Length: 350
Ligand code: KG4
Ligand code: ZN
Image (cartoon, rainbow, N blue to C red):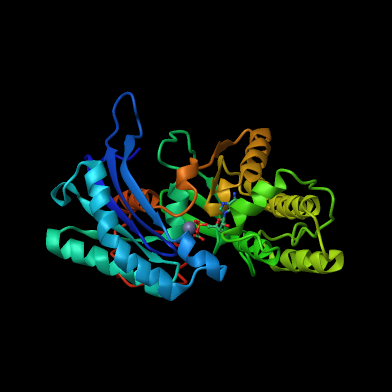
């Protein structure tokens, strides 16, 4: 158990296409709440989805332009909703990577400006570590070692966590991320962007057993993933089928989704057993997928391990998770990191 004074943290996130700023209040342990309590006072997310949708993916220069435009109003809204002034903030936590370099710089420079003006300390946060902490808003039962399955648009990783900030990557995708595969499959069928929510919605009406698609790397001894071959298999299937109706489209979506989930869940469960983890934590944009949530929860229960998944509003990119990671990192880490945009930043020990 960590002991600490009450703190307010301003989180800032601009790694991709969401401009987000949050105010978080973390209160020290009491007899009732032995781990302390976390209150999200505000978590403003300004999404750029509509701007990037016509291009079928995120355009970095447009993302940077939008962040530049949105940061100030989002910041003002976040403070107003939290009924707070900058004078009450103890720490600024900002995402420095991984992500789009020019987008990351917008958030970093904005935080530097605030830090200078209001004389506040800043802490550099890894976006993926932020996703991990999206499971720590209210759960008191997370026991270490905890195995994290992080599935987003840019990353797919299994990260073993033996304590706060004690991370070890035990597997990752060799090519496409899970969310990227959903987005690309949606693009092949002209379904729109981002593809994950659209494909999973259509999949609800489809038969997951209709098409036999590959389960890449399922039986390999390591904990790495690969989704590029699966995506290509869908492409060949579409070519072979030619014109398709709504029902077939739903069947393709369901069969594809099932293949992704089979690989993610089976490899996570195998790793959890090998590493004797006590908890399994799901996070990242793809953790919004209802079937993935249900399947991983069911399989974790069989192992009698503790399971956690973020509330829906914390599955995709948001600054509240960055602020919470900032709180823990500030407690645990003695290192001071440079505030430099790092597009390929890796998860590492604090
Ligand atoms: O974490 P996130 O918001 O951004 C990154 O850090 O990449 O994740 C976005 C990804 C996109 O690829 C999106 O298609 C996917 O999450 N996603 C989903 C669902 N909702 C969002 N994938 C599958 N099923 C969903 N319901
Ligand atoms: Zn993300």
